[in-house]
Length: 424
Image 1 (cartoon, one colour):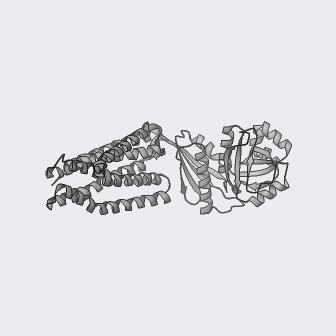
Image 2 (cartoon, rainbow, N blue to C red):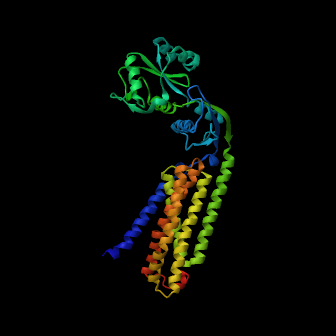
Image 3 (cartoon, rainbow, N blue to C red):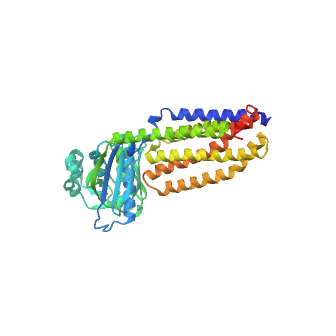
């Protein structure tokens, strides 16, 4: 019973998977974003400035600033920024789709040092009504008390809703004892939040806070989302200075993309022709499996809203080569079994089984290498590793299962029995 239903069930499952992949891909332009090298954007070089508290820019400080800037840019909705270290005290920030380097500079400048101060009532009233006074370092910041809690001790902040459905900010603390003592000593006073010495908002301390708390007020949903992002991103251990900024033209990126796509299509076409000529019927079946592989990988990139870069395209093309290599190993074993006098069914069964170890080992080593690259790499290296990792994993599946399904189906149904059609 199972043998009769096995192939139909496999066929239905394969058709369902392919159909789901095609549905996931459409519309692909809205789901797969292009990186800076393909669609243009802005590139900004930041230099970290020492302070009295942090006299030396160490690797840890550079890592902290990199994380903060990453969170800040992500929160502003910039698709897949690339932030990489330059030397020991600089960061290179690449922002796709940001068409103006001045805009990029403004966004990054907002990722400033976060501080909490006790704000006198008269300063609060003026800061909330006079934006110029609030933004002036010699205004609300100077007229408030000393810094009572640094922003780098803030663990995190999230936009949330209060009991009455009013938007608010929930925050968590790294040093609850220090903040608890601060709130205990200043009950009823206004605690102000300052970002890069600019007044953001203030709130009355209504109770002792030791591990987490809320910032409430007359906020809109957009305001709390922005404020939560600023609180998360404002904990820079040191200030930063913009050394240079450049606009990356989209025309060059479009040319690169077009050439890369043409190269990928030509390469895929040559591979399909090679397989059909060299391995005949199995080669044609492998071509169909290869198309299934391409559709499945595009579906994954689409579902993940991946950012495609030139190195990512290179990883995609390289994984196609891995898929073909697997089929070559399998079909060569198949031909050897046929030359040894095995029947067609035996040759298919033994050929796939004996080639499996070599195919599996070669794919797993590539998958491990791509995984290490993704975990330890930065920038466009991650894009290359991502497509190579999943492309290799998918090529293993299509070579071992999809191609095998097609070949078994042809052989079991005696559709083509001439061994010459199998390259023997």
